[in-house]
Length: 635
Ligand code: MSK
Image 1 (cartoon, helix red, strand yellow):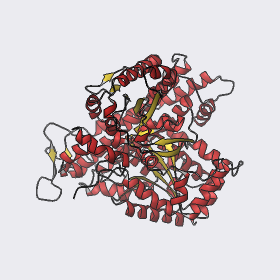
Image 2 (tube, rainbow, N blue to C red):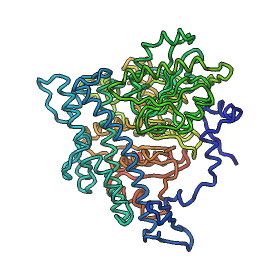
Image 3 (tube, protein in one colour):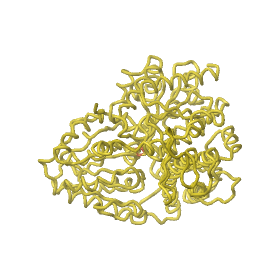
């Protein structure tokens, strides 16, 4: 039986068109890859040295040790923590890039950037314990950048990274410190993972996994700083009404898709596009320039500026199949290398922008913060030129988009609650959790994967949790799924929320001036913005005087695939949050590692992985966890 590929109606519309045009998509390549390697799926294939590859026979009488002597437990643990290191490297490199930009702004070297949210920068400074009295904003920016960059430079193993120390509950910090898993330096911790997993190094699966947890917490540190400093530079999200899905591409506009993760370039592209709109009209585009987002760069500009989201991960290629994207501008992460080939089938300019992320066949514009305006102008001009070559007969834009109310940062959530209780904004949330109107909170994060019909697990789980009065937050391509499927609307709240959740969302939304309820799922931003959800949870825990592992709070990545998702899931567990995975993690070839992550972690950290591929059952299991946590709190 063929698995359904996608539940996204616009993706489903375009797949036959791609087929007709002879364009191979991610789903075609998935099919061609079947059957996939069972050893790889179980995590028991070791490619760490050239005596190998070695693979352990997990069920039969074949080899139980690799040539060097490593057994399945060692191999699986090494493989998974290398994934964590890669994920942490991606996020923290993104964070470092933003921190260096903040430093450049403080020193007056980057004319394309400014501090757009001074209040946020001051709040960050206060959080990092930086004295701001009598300091101007440039001096504060310099001090914040310095304290942030220390998280990449500190050599004192006993001094935890500044951001993690400023972010978590005291109890959580003590617990992590006792396990020696608090990172002191993001770069060093990532390097240690690579070093300890070399042939002939750490072979103890427990020790390896603890090293991985430290790496995952370094990932968390990098995400916190990336989110908060981006807010200071580009503005803190606030609720905005926009739209999502491929129908946001306009037939009579120069369409520029911004794709990847890092907002440093896309912010400037948005600004320059406004200035060059007239040029696009002169080229015949009567609707001027239309910026649309893909993946998390899309989420970044969506939550800050209401730029519509065209696609999440799995449908990025289909954006090109519309024949109406004139330029796809990519920065880092989650960009399928196939986009340059597909762009070449049309008139689309696929433009890479980061020196360390190039794609054969793409045009490269070497983006530097110092020359950001000039780079962005070149990109927009290239898009206008490409538009002139567009063939209108090959344009197929699905007539499908959904309204999405997005932009729920911590400040806007607290701001909305403050309209109910200005003195003590968290009180209404806590009261409603305590009295059971809200049973618990679920954070949906993570990607799409070809292992799951696109978006289906997100949507199934959300509807079930909503009916059971669970408040939902979302980031990354999960947020993209909900936006595309109309679950970030007031109508979705009225249709799917259980009665008590509906009443609470309506009370908050109405009081906050939305003329109706908050949307069913609150969009908190890109995948690095998972740190926002943690901030809300920490504020609630601190107010109740408990730790994160006591809250009725769960996380879920129903369609996870990226190494970044492995890192995020692992820090979520380390923070005490039961974390659901809806795709099979590549660890099950080791009973020991599986036990560590799904059971032992519960005793050590309070959080643990829960694997359930069936989304309806997964929702039931998360509801059970929420009820267990409520019982623990006596509510
Ligand atoms: S883009 S990491 S597919 S969320 Fe953040 Fe989406 Fe996952 Fe990439």
